[in-house]
Length: 295
Ligand SMILES: NC(=O)C1=CN([C@@H]2O[C@H](COP(=O)(O)OP(=O)(O)OC[C@H]3O[C@@H](n4cnc5c(N)ncnc54)[C@H](OP(=O)(O)O)[C@@H]3O)[C@@H](O)[C@H]2O)C=CC1
Ligand SMILES: Nc1nc(=O)c2c([nH]1)NC[C@@H]1CN(c3ccc(C(=O)N[C@@H](CCC(=O)O)C(=O)O)cc3)C=[N+]21
Image (cartoon, rainbow, N blue to C red; front, side, top):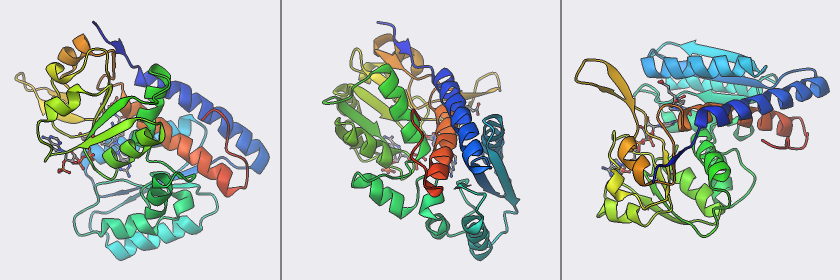
């Protein structure tokens, strides 16, 4: 079997267009566009690149972008004061503090300071709790993007066996919550899991969010399974160039899977589109408008 390629780039472009339409309507109703503030602390080059693509996508969708680049030496207190100002700014609907933060900064204190109604990353304990008990929440962008791809390419997920590899707060755990909410039978695997290949072999849906290039081999994949590859690692090739690799050995897995996301062009673009989606949703809720349809 040769897997169907799950086109994250095209799906993300459709979602960004919908956000642009919804944003334009919002602007007619309220006199302003939904606003997203992105905070980048220090010069970490991959983070700077992600922030550039987020700002570009925000502006292309007709949303307002507020960019705060602050020095690596910034203290936790200074960062909390910036978050307080953004919380109080009526033009800001969404706040994203780019991770990782420098080691001297208390990351949990910063994420917990963001107003949960502006928490478009879905990292605040209130949103984490709301997601876990099935209340309306702002849901982390990467797992939400993965769910949207699965719903588009697989359809109804009820009763399917899902294996999530990785248990981080930003990807693995919320992914498992969303799959459970979609009525999958969910297994969360991690670095202490015994016999990971055998666990993965029973999955109809595999979500790999590990950060170990090509850890998941083709021989682990059940025939016809859907494979979502969250991994993004730059790995030096024998010829000295650097290649972006996922957590799945793509060529092998594509021979057995029913559908699979490429890297790049799979989950990554959906993360950014869902960030814009969450900003538009947060803006509507803050203005007391009903949630926009079709997002
Ligand atoms: N496409 C996108 O939009 C995004 C991509 N990413 C990418 O996704 C990947 C994961 O990111 P993130 O969740 O932040 O990573 P973390 O490092 O926070 O978590 C990695 C998880 O993988 C588990 N793990 C590590 N090694 C193994 C192994 N050999 N077998 C099984 N499980 C293992 C760890 O287990 P344990 O808990 O036991 O240590 C941990 O739970 C990275 O490549 C990152 O760049 C991240 C965010 C967004
Ligand atoms: N507060 C916070 N929220 C995040 O959502 C967040 C974060 N911090 N820190 C870092 C991770 C990582 N992340 C990605 C976003 C887009 C791509 C993406 O667009 N990737 C492209 C490739 C990009 C390239 O070529 O380098 C693709 O897969 O096609 C990847 C990774 C969001 N993260």
